[in-house]
Length: 328
Image (cartoon, helix red, strand yellow):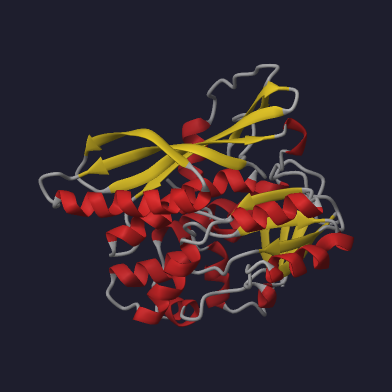
């Protein structure tokens, strides 16, 4: 669903509270967090979607990595998972589902996550993902709205998966472009999460369906700060520029832009293709981390040394444009 439709669906619903509920539905966080003891809390999330690549094994790996990402964004460690499956049994061979599940299991094994079960329903369209439970110390939860003026913003993966996935569906994406986004989308955000916890950061979110600027908006909504984005510093996939200029734009991109347009000021010097990419809905995107200025280069160097090669400082947190995003 687009962010506007989702906001309408959730509007007016009662919020539950409990002394042990650290993070619930009161804000647009990546996962819920519930305290079990003074030094142990569980992190819970669920995510599933339709295929965005043609290969069923790769789809399974991408969906699993995407589902695990919400736990990593909170600074947690995923432990167990449940498969969520919708499958058109009359339209597809069961071997396709087997490959999807194998891809998911391989990615869970890489993450050290144990598959403990799942649920399946017959559906006209294939969908797959995970419900994930992880753990974290209650005092080490990284929220998405804790950024402070002076922080630097680090993005750990390139943008453009939505645009390239649209090109895949249209038969216009080259093999190299497909290979590039599959490699990125199947990469776990575990290392980035561990590095940010080691260094100490103020806020984090993962970049998924609402696009970079949509998730940036969630980070500053209701806070006393704004954010500046240096568009030239934002990493993007090699073919994303050309495909965006060709009009390979997913519908979700327009919904993302419409919902957050009042919060975003974009300089005239930012080309249209790049504006599109900044709103592009991502799948299994990177982490966006707000880190104290004096620690930003330390974290960036750690990320690069640990193989998160595309990580880049893309902007900062400022006080003078409260509740706004300035893109230059």
